[in-house]
Image (cartoon, rainbow, N blue to C red; front, side, top):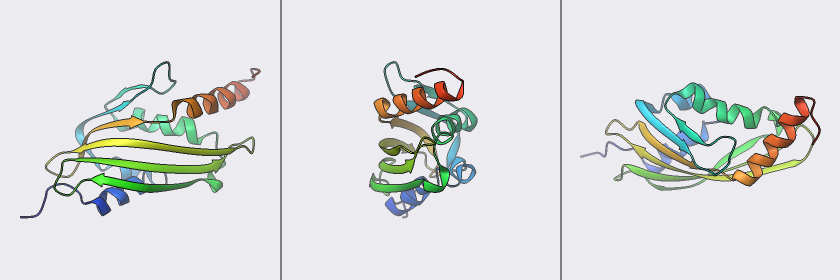
Length: 146
């Protein structure tokens, strides 16, 4: 009997689309899902239960990058297949709008329902890197000094 959960390769494909085609990535979520972004005193921390607020996390980050330099790669998937749980390690590189190198690696812990849809996801971002990135670019664009 085939597993109801996505295989490693399917999970890799899902998460490979997350930045390049967010609307496709959003179709992988169940109707009732929760995404938790962890972090203490972190700009983006919180619980998200709809794709718009979840997507706004990545919009805030990517808006300050030169999109033509952005490369996103799923480095590793652990789990999936016979398990409802999978861990996804992703790496992103780009240049910021101020021509600084941006290298971010993060981990998602994901649980799928019996239809292969994401029902729970915990994101472990590099809070220091993202915090500095947002502080520098959001303050600069608002006309403040950094």
